[in-house]
Amino acid sequence: MFPKIHLFKKRDYAYLMLAASIIAGGFAIANSQARTAPLQNTLQAYLVGVDQQGREILQPTREVEPGQLIEYQLTYSNTGSSALKDVVVTGPIPAATAYMPQSARSQARAQLQVSVDNGKTFESEPVKRMITDKNGRKVEVIIPPSEYSHVRWTMKEPLQAGVTQQFAYRSIVE
View 1 (cartoon, rainbow, N blue to C red):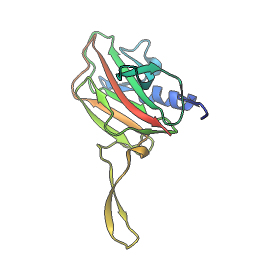
View 2 (spheres, rainbow, N blue to C red; view 1 turned 30 degrees about the vertical axis):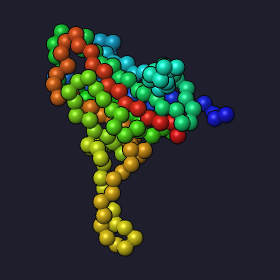
View 3 (cartoon, one colour; view 1 turned 45 degrees about the horizontal axis):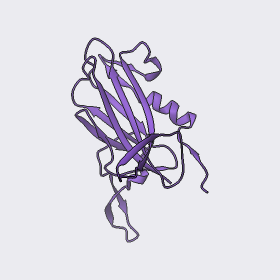
View 4 (cartoon, one colour; view 1 turned 135 degrees about the vertical axis):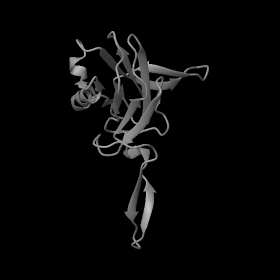
C-alpha cells in the first residue's frame, strides 16, 4: 500500500493564502485580511473518480495516494459594494504532484499563466527555453508541465459586486 500524502502542508497553505491576493484600487488585499476585505476566497481539493455509471465524480479530500488525480477549486467572491479591478488568482501545485496539462479553467474571462520558478515569474503555456545541446547548438525546448510550480489567472474584467467566480486545475500525485 502506498503511503498517504497530506495535500496541504502548512507551508503550502500559508503560501496559498499569501498568493491569493488582488490589487483593488491600488491596494493589495491578502487573504489573511479577507474577513474585512471585499474579496472572499476558498480552496478545496477533490479526489477525481468515476461512479458506477462511468461519470466523473469529485470527492473532497485532504489526503491522497500516488497515482490519484486531484482537482483544486478556488472560489472568489466579491462581497463588497463595488467592482474589484485587476483580480489575480494564484494556485500552487503542491509538492509530490504534477500539473495535468490543459486542465486549468475558469468561469471568468481570464488569462492563464504558469510558473516554473516557485511563483517568481509567470508565462503562457507552453513554457519554452533555449538551451545548449551536447553539440553546442542552441535549441528550443518545451518545459514539461510536471515542472510547473503554480498556475495564475489574471481576470480581464472587473469582479463585480456580489459575483462569485470559480477557478480550477488538476494535478496527478507522484
